[in-house]
Each structure stands twice: as structure tokens, then as C-alpha cells.
Image (cartoon, rainbow, N blue to C red; front, side, top):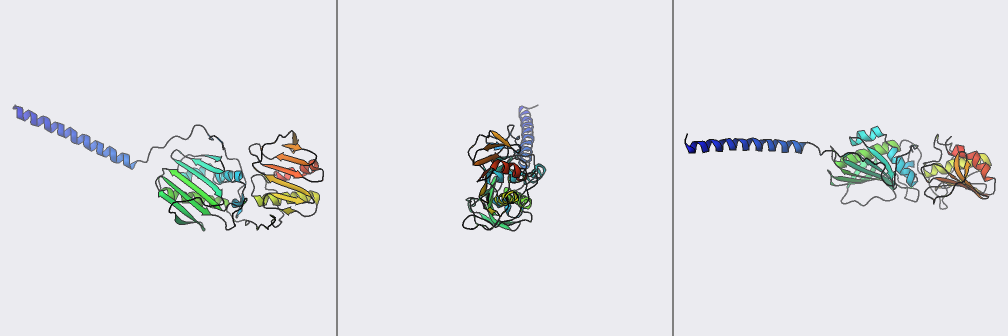
Length: 322
């Protein structure tokens, strides 16, 4: 066989292999492009530093979601959807935590933050959006990478107790554009937390709100309740023991016949050497302070010219929803 013929055959064989390799590479590239990015594993350590596993809370109704204490609002937003519902919305297994006043939700490929605030988050060139009748704005500079949304839940003016805006931030990768996913999350949260119920009450110049008799929230009482509902429960419990009429305030306080009951969240830690109604307490001559839960700083204090220990023992079971 001539040398030229052998060379021609070898060249043909090499070109054939090259064509097959190129085709295989092209098909692999096409297949890889069609597949979603491989999901990362969920964090092995959870909750993260400073985070809390969401605790069981009572869901607000009406406009009350906008009047939650800051720490409580994070737990409510996380618990508004069950784990199964979160996974259905986000499309994969999830972990949730209350973190610095926000609900933080992660999957293998997504990170979601939700919070309530008195002002909308600053967005870049947002588009108007309406979610279940509530107006807002959405930013999707890169809808495949991140999306942010502000949604006004109530018309009431912002204050220390009223946070009208729901803020949602989503980043990562998903099967649908993240702006659509963000709107789906907002819709689910609104449906879960704004079922028919009371409006945010009007606050007078002295901070008081119209009185309303309110029985304890079963299994929860004033714990993680909206500010007005805390005040109404305090007044109902105190007037039941002391008689007279109560003077509820928007900030979780009620005064009845010179006795003041105050709910607080985020106070500096106390030492509680006593026990009242099964809860750690501090009892002095002119003050009773009760730690309401083991995993929060929520506290009830009573002051006034009466037997505060006896009063606290009488009203605490109701205020804890027992």
C-alpha cells in the first residue's frame, strides 16, 4: 500500500474520532445547560449564630400582624406557613430560624429573609405590584439571582408598635424567576396572617386605645401577641380582680385603679429568685416581674399600691393562656 494512501486513511480515522468527541462534548454541554444548578446541602449546624428555632405562636388576624412586638414578629412570619407549606412554595426541604428580628429560611439553593418594618426597604428601579389587594413594589435587577419586595399591609401610620410594611428578600436559584417566587411567598404570608379580624386601633395623643374586653388567647395569652391584644388582655384580667375600668395603651400597658401592668420585650436580663404560677419571678415591695417564657426576654411587670404577689398569682394563669 502506498504511503500516501496510509496517511489518508489515518487522517480520516483521526477526523472521525474528532467529530465523535466534538459531538459528545456538544451534547454534554447542552445537557448541562438544561439541568438546574446542583443544590447545595442544607446547613449542618442550625440554627445559625444568634438564631432561634421558631417557637409555636398564635397566628394574628385582621391587621394585627402589623402590630407585633419585633421578636415575636420574626417567629410569627416563620410559623405562618408550616414546614410542608414552606417546602411546597420553595420547592425543596427548608430550615427556618428567627434571626435579628427577621424570619430566615434556607433551602439547598435559596435564602429568604422576611421582616416587618415601619418603612419600605430601599429598592433600585422597582416595579409596582399588588398582592392580594395590598400594594407594593418589587425589585428584580436579576430575576434569576435575587429579588426584593415591599408590601404595605395596613394603612395605619408607622410607629414604635405599628410596622405596616412586609419586606421580603430572596436570593439564589429556583425553577421559576425569583420575582415570581417572591410574590408567591408574599401571597402565602398574607393569606396566613391576615384572615378576617380586627383593625389596628386608633391611638390617642396620650398613647391610649379604645378599651375592649378580651379573653385569654388559648395556650398563649399575652405571649407573642400583638400589642393591642396584650393591653386588652391585661385590662380584662386586672378589672376582673380589681373592678373598675381599665386604661389600655398601644404599647402593651394597662392601668386599673392605680395598678399598672406592663408587657416588655428586650429588657436587660434580671435575676428571678422567686416563682409565681410556675414562672420565674422577682418580687419586691413595690414591683413584681415575671419572665413569661424560657426562650425569650418577654416580661410582665406589675406595680402599684396593692398586694402585688397575690394579684400576680391570680392573673398570671389567664395571661399565659392556661
